[in-house]
Amino acid sequence: MAVIRPFRALRPPAERAQAVASVPYDVVNTDEARALARGNALSFLHVSRPEIDLPAGTDIHSDAVYRKAVENFEKLIAECPLEKEAEPSLYLYRLVMGDHEQVGIVACCSIDEYDNDTIRKHERTRRDKEDDRTRHMLMLRAQTGPVFLTYRRRAEIDEQVSAALNASPLYDITAEDGIRHTIWRLAETDALVNSFRSVPLLYIADGHHRAASASRARGELRDQSFTHTGQEDYNYFLTVIFPDSQLQILAYNRVVHDLNGMSKDEFLEAIRRQFTIGENADPAPKQRGQWSMYLEGKWYGLHLSPETTLPDGVVQNLDVSVLQDRLLDPVLGIKDIRTDKRIDFVGGLRGTKELERLVDEGKAAVAFSLYPTTVAELLMVSDANQIMPPKSTWFEPKLRDGLLIHSI
Image 1 (cartoon, rainbow, N blue to C red):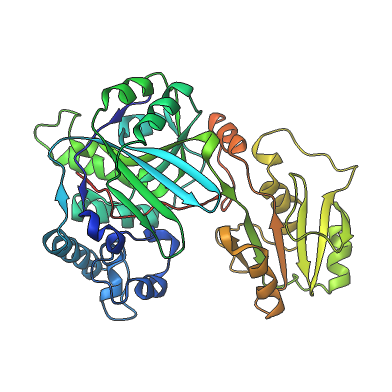
Image 2 (image 1 turned 30 degrees about the horizontal axis):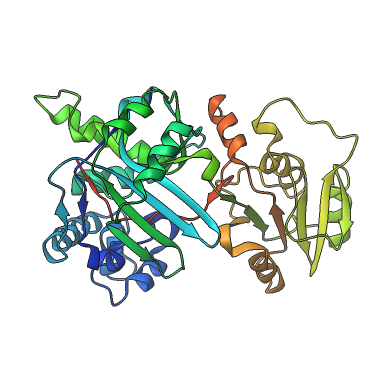
């Protein structure tokens, strides 16, 4: 059973939503965040990446950064102002990017269900990233950006969501990247809450670190409470829940800085031990089991050789796993993509032109373009209680921070 809970959102007035809404904290670095927020005192990046308002070179995990987050949050609440809803509500959040459209339900989900795996995961989290967001939540006593969840679609829920879109929205903004964000507040919530009770499982699509941090923050607040009941706001975390049929995963490509001491010809010969290689390939593979490789100004198409067999297992047969196990590790010597400095990743809309640029400018020696991991693969891995390799999924479009905040 999936528990969803209405909440009293802390949110900006409609006329200031465009200025407040910001990209998620973890898709930009400090310099990029500073550039995006420049000249906009209301940008939520002042709260989610507060180091942008401190001297260059400030340690982003220092006490001063978290104090600045609190200061900026309190200032935004007072001056924007951010106001809290009088009654708990659910919301709808529609994203439109070009021809793609998806509509999710904004609700709070149970941390108990996250902890007991009713909310499934597919990614390992890093302790340092958890530490950062846990402290951020505890200092602000708020969850400021949602976790992106999915579920296997149900017609009953689709119908309720579709009917609610006829109302006037709270917000309807188009961000600087051209993505349209529209949010509705639902006057009636019982029907959706009841419908989700028949959804057996929810799945994290994006936001594993936010979810893990919410669980850790709950643990600390529970331990500090003398009257813990299990119904406090800190027992729930902010989410947007989309049906699996609407999700869009884009390719998460790889670039490698060198050829592991080999010449071009030696490199190609090493690859041929596992793959067949075709020249003048399409930069973007058209289906699973194909990889495109950019080397010295030319695209090559890679297919596993007919005599190559793969082990059983959902994870082992993912395209990202095959590339890692059959090429990046044995040929290029990249054992752990989490820690190896010789590999970088290019996700989402930056596409194959960015791969070509990096190689042509000498910033990488070779680039690999992959067919995107599918939503079905994500669900299968999660159902098997297994973990995808790092950098397997890139979801677009992205949600915005700061529009609907959950106080804990």
